[in-house]
Image (tube, rainbow, N blue to C red; front, side, top):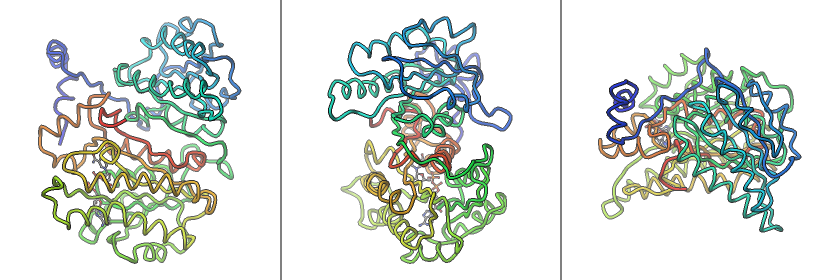
Amino acid sequence: MADRYLSFTATAPGRFLTARLGLPQPAALNRWTAEHPSLDGHLLHLTAGGPSGLDLAPVLARTGLPTATVAAGSAAGAATGSTGPAAVVLDATGVRDVDALAEVHAALHPVVRSVAASGRVVVLGAPLDARDHHQAAVQQALEGFVRSLGKEIGRGRTVNLVRLTDASAAESTLCFLLSPRSAYVSGQVIEVGAAGGPDGPVDRDLPLAGRTALVTGAARGIGEAVAETLARYGAHVVVLDVPQAAQDARRVAARLGGSALTLDITAADAGERIAAELPDGLDVLIHNAGITRDRRLVNMPAEHWSSVLDVNLASVLRTTDALLAKGTLRTGGRIVATASIAGLAGNAGQTNYGASKAGVAGLVRSLAPRALAEHGVTVNAVAPGFIETRMTAAVPLFIREAGRRMNSLAQGGLPVDVAETTAWLAHPASGSVNGQVVRVCGQSLLGA
Ligand SMILES: NC(=O)c1ccc[n+]([C@@H]2O[C@H](COP(=O)([O-])OP(=O)(O)OC[C@H]3O[C@@H](n4cnc5c(N)ncnc54)[C@H](O)[C@@H]3O)[C@@H](O)[C@H]2O)c1
């Protein structure tokens, strides 16, 4: 269902009227296209809290954006030039006390207004130091700072925090956040570990070339967009969906040069069937299939509870366990599960769905370190907010409108926004990103 309000505010009379009425004015987001693969403009690299130990320059160069670096303590305003930056990276890893935190204000205060529409602000922080509560306090302060700036910055601009210790391990994450691919990701805190680079060189345009990816529930909606994006990155994609959706699954697979596998993911032997289908192994497993059966708990039949828990959580646990145990997931593999902001914030009428999606986040956090240590496989989740799909088109009008507007970008996301985030987590160079639950929600006002 098209967002008519968004189209209306893109017109001159629409902008005038909504401004007069004090209504939200969502900006048209700048998303990735083959003709327009990067942000327009330069990247401003700032520092707060003294010189950092990070070797950021070569990593920022990989974003493809011309970079202007401003030394710590210098005036950043001059470096913004006549046109504002498309992106600002503030290295605040060296901030260890409240006085140094003032440098975050000093660095961004003069430039934030000039950041281009659909631009990016990425703050880099350090892991919290358990032995230094001053450092931990101000590093945690960056989280509140980033989330607050995300809510006020407007014009389709996003603000995220990356906690890291090694710049090169964060390359795939920074390239994602500093590109149009992350258009609907804002207000997020992403932790990047130290290790986990790819074994060999990675093709920049086709990073998944030679890899096999299986996407559950890929006959339509978000799953179809994920399959399409992974195929665009070079993967051979297996489109899995229920037998009733076989025709659509085959159509998607044929379009992407992949293969279709019709299978109900709740089947007890689903993992074994997938393993049998992929004797040469699997590199990327995307748990996307999901259903809703909404009712308030007082009215919810047991069947609504069990079917949602079975598709959204139990089958994810079963197939993950089976494919890891059988060694189907190769070393360097990636698992990305689909949670939801309903699982993080809760939603009336969705006790079953919220429980299942919170369960996915729990699975990711617990399994991630073990899966990496024992199998060399990372485990992460995406948590979509309001995404324009058939699932959300079925939501009653008033709730749908509220869902679309109640986020910092004042609009719903598109399936491709979830797909691009999934593809970043599935990237061979994202081995240092593990156990993360990343919201793709335009910084929804629901939940943290
Ligand atoms: N649309 C949103 O706004 C939104 C928000 C948060 C989370 N999500 C999650 O994203 C995922 C995709 O959502 P969508 O909006 O594209 O949904 P959708 O209903 O459009 O597509 C879901 C797909 O999963 C398939 N599927 C369902 N049960 C299955 C089973 N047992 N075995 C195999 N395939 C099965 C369906 O046939 C369908 O093709 C779901 O996990 C959903 O919970 C969606």
